[in-house]
Amino acid sequence: MTQTTPVIELRNLTKSFKRHGISFRAVDDISLRIQAGETLALIGESGSGKSTTGRLILGLDKPDSGDVLFQGESLRTKSAKEVRRLRANLTVVFQEPFESLNPRLRIGAIVEEPLVVQGVGSAEERRERAAGALERVGLTASMMDRFPRELSGGQQQRIGIARAIIGKPRMIVLDEPTASLDRTIRRQIGDVLDELKRDLNLAYLLITHDIGTVRQVSNRSAVMLQGKIVEIGPTAEITEDPQHPYTQRLIGAELPVSVAKPRRTSIETKEAAL
Image 1 (cartoon, rainbow, N blue to C red):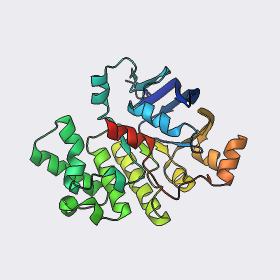
Image 2 (cartoon, rainbow, N blue to C red; image 1 turned 90 degrees about the vertical axis):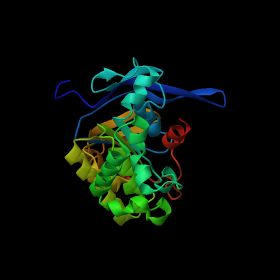
Image 3 (cartoon, rainbow, N blue to C red; image 1 turned 180 degrees about the vertical axis):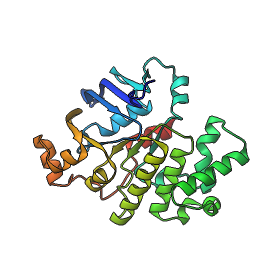
């Protein structure tokens, strides 16, 4: 892998589904590249194909055509076992923090869980790494014996982020990570994500309706409409001088989609079924 090889690359990716007997393309021949240390925001209205793109990157769905390359290696050629192994390097932070955390587990066990699944380290080593992950997201090791219900929404989302980074991934899909939080907490979570990206040289795909978060943490933005990328470029240009009429409408209206009642995303629902 050369220094210019992206962490993730999508090449002419297509994915179709059937609904009521009618086939439709959720992702329609899209190509994207995300480098280490970069955040690419994927924005668009509900049903535009953003979450399907995230699932394809995570290996939760297989494309009909095209390819997903991780650090230059095609995921299409990998076995299911190899894809599961690679998923240690491709993690996700979900939209609704409380619903993504097992309410019966203590915080320490939740954060350690990826290491348990991967068979990494002893119990003592895993607990030590969990404490370090919590500190990285602005929490303390003293929270490890508490339950998710005892924490605020912002703290719960920090737990989700700690769980996502504990396995030392190369890339994280951020699926509406601030949608259920108030504006002040959104900015704080954005700061945490931005700091982790710089410190750990992470690549992010940020799926969001929140233009404030897009402006805060993303380097580039891509706009999706009916499964296609209709505009892509530096975030400052996309948000301050959009060229495509659809982008102009989204930015002008600050993405007026239904986010008032957060729910589990399709990425999370598929993940839970595995």
